Image 1 (cartoon, rainbow, N blue to C red):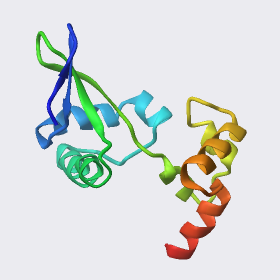
Image 2: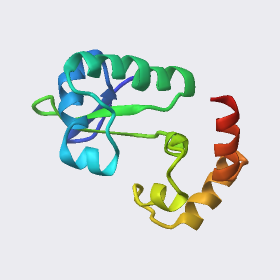
Image 3: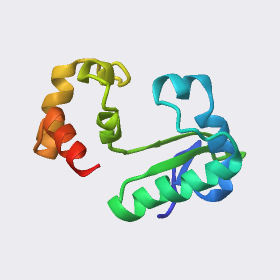
Image 4: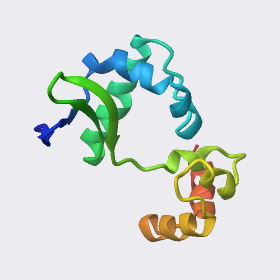
Amino acid sequence: MQAVETARLRLRMITTDDAEFIQRLYSSEDFLRYIGDKEITNTAKAEEYIENNILKMHQEKWVCLLMVELKAISTPIGVCGSITRTSLLKQQDWSVSMITNRLVDKDPYNLSHRFKKHFGLSPSQYRKNYRLTS
């Protein structure tokens, strides 16, 4: 994928060269609080996460996270992109309300409605299917 640029920012594919930044970002207090612990405790685990999750997601689903960096000094400041959060439903002991508390939209009805529209299953139906295949 070719980088996308604005006057001040560059959005580009994340590579394993970004492992140190990804490790710091994914270990930050806000990331852990609002996104969750991906257990990226060192740069080797960050490289593995980039290869097995970020790049794999792009290869298989054509959606991914992109590195956001300040163009003038080529400094990473964050990531952005499109991901699916079905992994939250795999937390067997979490209710839909607990899941929505971890998202921007905190309304369980909205989550259920949008989830069913996108996947053709309610969150509880998806969870039942996941249990059968896990």
